[in-house]
Image 1 (cartoon, rainbow over the protein chains, first blue to last red):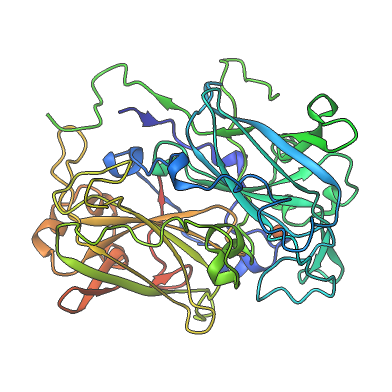
Image 2 (image 1 turned 120 degrees about the vertical axis):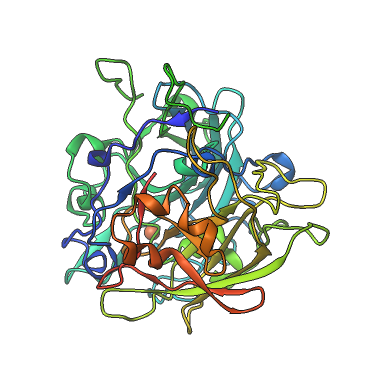
Amino acid sequence: MNEFIPRDRDQHPPAVTPIYKTSVLRGPHRPLISLQNSLSEVTGPVFGHGDIGPLDNDLILNYAKTGQPIGERIIMHGRVLDGSGRPVPGVLVEFWQANAGGRYRHRNDTYVAPIDPNFGGCGRTITDAEGRYAFRTVKPGPYPYRNRGNDWRPAHIHFSVFGTGFAQRLITQNYFEGDPLIARDSILGTIPDQAARERLVAKLDLDAAVPLDTLAYRWDIVLRGSRSTLFENKLEGN
Amino acid sequence: MFTPNALGYLAETPSQTAGPYVHIGLIPKQAGFDIFSNNLGESPIGADTPGERIRIEGRIFDGTGAPVRDALVESWQADAEGRYHATPTADGFRGWARTGTDFESGLWAIETVKPGRVPGRHGHKRMAPHISLWIVARGINIGLSTRLYFGDEEAANAEDPVLRIIEQPARRQTLIARREAPGHYVLDIHLQGENETVFFDI
Ligand SMILES: [Fe+2]
């Protein structure tokens, strides 16, 4: 088993980011202790099609009760790659989002926009042999949240991704190109690097759209890469 | 889609907070609805998994000492023999679980088997029994990696190669769950403050 290349923390938000107020009391202050990978970090759970259901990647149908959800029908798709650009096949990708009005189906969400009776807002899939994922949904709406006095989240979908090792575990959010709220977002604003922020923006992909039916956006995900040990600094005993 | 650097590597996708509604995607029952036929991570073990049955639990505290009541905790561990399994064994052991802190009490809990000792890196001693934890929540910008060790494994903990790289012995204690009763371990996690938990860059 190969160990992972150390995480480049400059690509990520720091723990404490005053622009996002909640992080001030929840972000650790002390330096992280750097660990060389052991078996506990390079191994991790691997999921298969037996773990998920046939409608889990179709948010238009997976909670439909009396009809289909309201909103712009979209396909979200892309590839999961590792740091060497290799596709990562057979990994679990999970996603959750607000409905087209910006409301989550969650007991703690009290935003005035209504729940859509036909929209759950979550799903999951497993990447194929080329590392591709795809799911169908409606485009989420922006919503306000308590941070600065008038903060609105740009439309976004939350993503959770597994790799082959627990050290690759990643949760993030993606955005939609052209949204004027992107430049004003305090969550995206926690990432110091402009190029890194741009990598979270999905691109309109007309070629993947279904004419007269569903638009498409494309967004690729990059997990940490691993390296084969060239010399003697071996991972396991004996 | 993304541009490789001069050596051909791609930068990792940046992390973003899991937000207040992480439950919808990962543990929808806690969000208040039922959608999937198979809710992943409800248990790390099967009914027939061999090993000592244990319960690990705790709370997560913010910088004011208030419990974080909307966090998600994932756990990853070896079986009772110290072996990891990427896919479930015949007896139902997977070693991976996820749960949320309770919206009222802030308590999280996982029922599992006590892991065995796992080989350390080449030339290192075996690691003491431990469970890897990964914590995400609103206000946490990138998932926090830590470990839970067991308070009744003093000899193994003393030679654990990971605990030993923590310079201050007092800080090692932030990873050691206290044994409240046979098979019942409690580990409180402090995000900030005097007793800030050791988090790892793995
Ligand atoms: Fe959100």
